[in-house]
Image 1 (tube, rainbow, N blue to C red):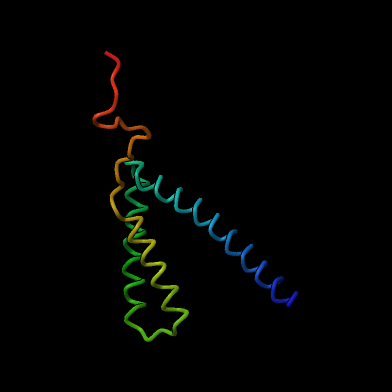
Image 2 (cartoon, rainbow, N blue to C red):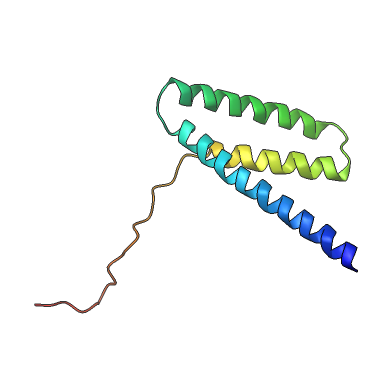
Length: 101
């Protein structure tokens, strides 16, 4: 049982590391896409190219693991190509709240 816990701990550590790396890379990609300069246009073109390549991959017969991998990659590319949403304010006034008059 100890070996199983060690394996699970290693897998959990690896997953957390990958999630951290993904967070940083996603943030950098989002910043690159919203910069509004030549680099942003180039990054968007690269993502659109990646989307086409991934779509080609889905046309091939894929094993289960590869299909999950490709689906996750497609979801990330789609997420990055979405126009950015306006940030919600941190504080909102509650309608009907108390006023000091």
